[in-house]
Image 1 (cartoon, rainbow, N blue to C red):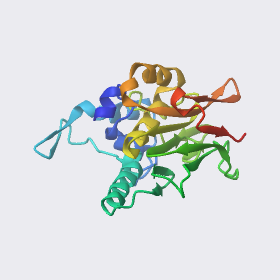
Image 2 (image 1 turned 90 degrees about the vertical axis):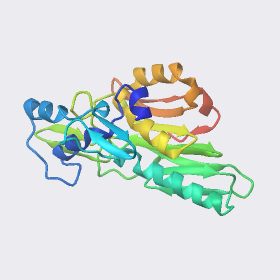
Image 3 (image 1 turned 30 degrees about the vertical axis):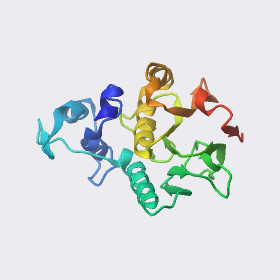
Image 4 (image 1 turned 180 degrees about the vertical axis):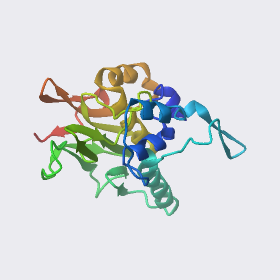
Length: 239
């Protein structure tokens, strides 16, 4: 809810009905048009849910929650907290590409790779950059793995909660470094929805969040990268 408010709704866990409708959830894919999307948007919106005494209260009973955008990051945080409770201070925990580096690796800082966005699902995976981390989490969001093409149109799994349609921005890959993996995971998705300029503006306006980013984006057909100041010197470009 905090990230939803800060991001102006770019991150929103109430998108489950839309995610299912596009075929990216457990439900059967629907035949979509503007009218159907608008009807699903009617019960989408983080302001339409609240917690009272550990009870979820919905304004609309049709509202469904989808925590996929933070589930892996949250799990990484839980595992790191468990290791810390067992006095394991040096570890790298990774789950589904989301990770957190604690301490060091044999007195050296941890080094982790960031994937090159894929233009097609048939391409072989390769690294775009390597980031040096210490006591930080790193999570990446992108539309280049989970998508399908229907009638010549590409439908990706990251949905813009405000429009109800898949997010179409210039950012191809959004990597966020933060203290907690759940936070990094959520903002990685939010920045994909916001787009490059809005994401940069957000970072300038919220220095207190201590977020760092590495974006791969498309500028008129040319792939470029943006690295925030806090990661300068910590990122090694590979291609």
